[in-house]
Image 1 (cartoon, rainbow, N blue to C red):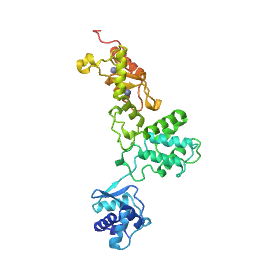
Image 2: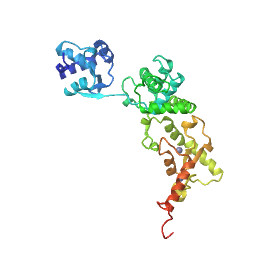
Image 3: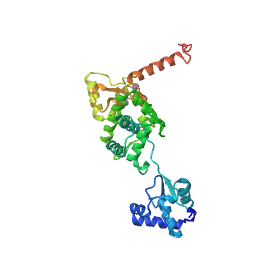
Image 4: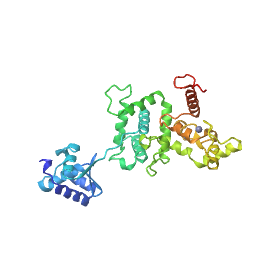
Length: 346
Ligand SMILES: [Zn+2]
Ligand SMILES: [Zn+2]
């Protein structure tokens, strides 16, 4: 037998049979499992590539192939199908984001840094949680997205990197190691972060409400897995919170101006800018966990300062840090690039 015997007609007949039986039965009757990565796309439907080729071989060659008779994948099945004029798509599960790895690492910690078994209820639980989370939109998910076996593999990637592990670490990626070191350095804090993350996903960061790319995170959108950071920014934009903060400031007779740089929207923009200011929460949700916001936690700042605070998603500044950035910068620009005093006309 050779795959080269398969014709486009044979493949079309296999597709017709797939349609007639439905996926589950087609796979069961041909003896193939679901495709891991490669799918034929035909008339808007997806077909498991290897199973289709196995069946197609039987159409004109009268010998259906079984999964063990040939290897699937890019070099064999996908190449053949493309050469016959079919569209083959590779659908692979997205890499684990940092947030997802934090949740997996937290699970490994509760298991004394050992690999967790596939039937462990905590594995099933985490698998379900990640599948409901909006971290990766449905369109980019492959088959078996974050299934229990995938969760177990990730816990192995983490556990086998632990300093006390004697064997050779499994593959994993760079972020696994980073998250592991953070857990070793600050266990309580990281556990609290994982708990907050879990609560946030359970509370509604679910696929129903697909994440919007947040301009405040400057390109660090959902793919970075910054669940709590997105939640933080959404919380700051709560109009009720902002109204309450402004009312409190007015009661105290405080001018509505930026607490960092003093910018006053009314002074610059006149009536159009009157009463405009942004609310910034001093403590990131990823640090505080889901707590009720008190008005004193909020700072009133201008849009520029606010953007600068959140500009780097992995390193948000405090109000005080931004204020000193500004004053240092002012000093630098009045003293010239070499620290000398300014121009002659000073
Ligand atoms: Zn400002
Ligand atoms: Zn903010």
